[in-house]
Image (cartoon, rainbow, N blue to C red; front, side, top):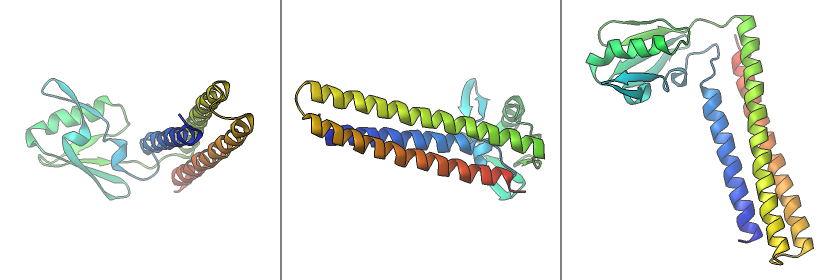
Length: 186
């Protein structure tokens, strides 16, 4: 393995950490309705736990409204039960073809709780990025021990690794700032 390969693998894993963070933050409620709030809700579909996004089309036609149109109209009651069981604080209503969920606006206290939750998730993502850096550093040390790279090359690669980590930590902060802004928006 070369220094370039170590840096590429490290960057790829850091991108993965940011992607996982974005997916995770999408499920955190803001004042606005988004399909991500319910798409991972598990519904017992003919005895098999199935994510809601595989059973229905989920839309947010208005800022405070979600609509769920099941592919199989017979599953509408099952989907309602799954949403209620997920304990998201939503009460679904249906007209036989479409499930509607009105997303209530967040209280100021709840907004602050959500911002704290976002901060926790950001810290977890930063720890993940630092762990990836540590793993990359170990690979570089191994290359140096096996005399595949010189001490100077090791130190240069170590600096590159730190720059890469700093870049992704900044991106994590930027993702967090956007999410906090969304949550605090009334």
